[in-house]
Length: 119
Image 1: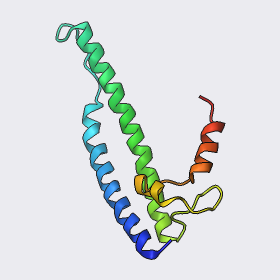
Image 2 (image 1 turned 60 degrees about the vertical axis):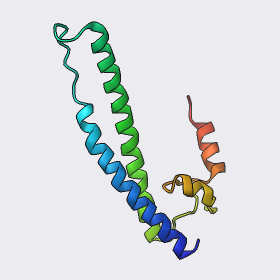
Image 3 (image 1 turned 90 degrees about the vertical axis):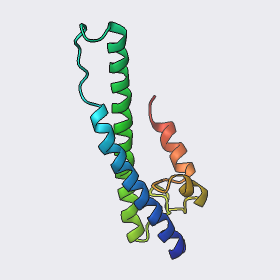
Image 4 (image 1 turned 45 degrees about the vertical axis):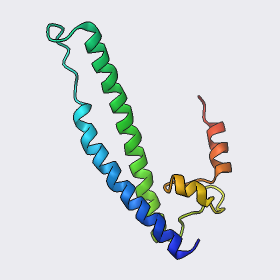
């Protein structure tokens, strides 16, 4: 991969890292404990609030995992490992990196990994 391409992806990763850090800071307020006082809110509202809290928590966990992957990818840009599959060592398709610059695996290795994982 050309140095200019790696620099472009590095900029994209830095921007993505900043966005994820902002999202994680904002979403921590929404994942606070739900008050279960039925006198203040009805049963349906409390259930909706708990469901919303669970969804925010799941999104928060997903964003934390993605932030870790972004930081790992940034380290790979510094060591010339960026853009190569961590499993087979082949170059990762640039279109795949355009969509998710933090990608660690080529499409074939990602598919194999997903097939091995139990549902």
